[in-house]
Image 1 (cartoon, one colour):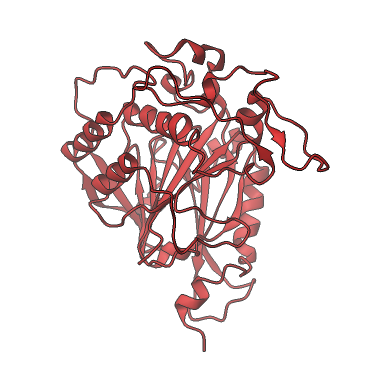
Image 2 (cartoon, rainbow, N blue to C red):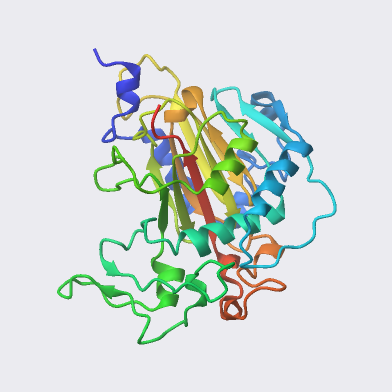
Length: 363
């Protein structure tokens, strides 16, 4: 008889039909309909009485701890953009847990705005420009990485490259393939879908290498371990980039050889997050089994932690909400005191949602 752990780690298992139906429902739903749907958990709107019975406060991340994490993260800032002076401490974050999903913890507005800007700076300037961090186009294109700037205090960045240049072409590795050459705009705006940090997840084999030469960024690791009090050690991160018509199908994160939880950070536009678990865990796994399900609207700065029984749950992102990026983040990578080359990319984040899920791979 297979163990529960074996069931959870079957990378080829089929998802229950119930969450697939829920996924399709919200994928087709209009943005105004989502706004009016009281089944959606939305902390900004406020929880309904029924939701308050199931989603309860269980902890608080103190203002002092968030401020400590922010200050530490700021020390590693490389000067890509000038940071605003922060004169007040961030607000404490109330942590909620869903009673039907043991280990599903929700952290509304955990990351202060300046932390969100720094996070995107690190991911999309520094880490995207590091050839050790693979992207979804590595197998198909020769990538013209940006040069190191003369000012070594600043990281290289694809956002310093011209929109279109014969000297900066993403050329297909196989000239006989159906792929066409890309310019920088096509790469950053349309083709770039994911970036892997640290231990490089293989999307084809659905596995991690036994030994990884790629270290997880230490400053991001410090931020995560401080906020989550060393409950897990980030060894791999998957950065997903969405536009309003993009989505993430129903799946489970089951390739990690570790029982510890993962934390998923939202930056930019709002998204709908669906998660499901078996109503009868002892029931034989089949596509028609009954599910407990919840739909959560995640906003910029929110964090979802999946731990305990919920760590291996089926989940999906059926919808990204257009025109929901915070106003102060819309113009990224442009900001006061920033690099002049970024001006041509003004408004990049207005139509983007960036999600990074940090997880421990090895137990």
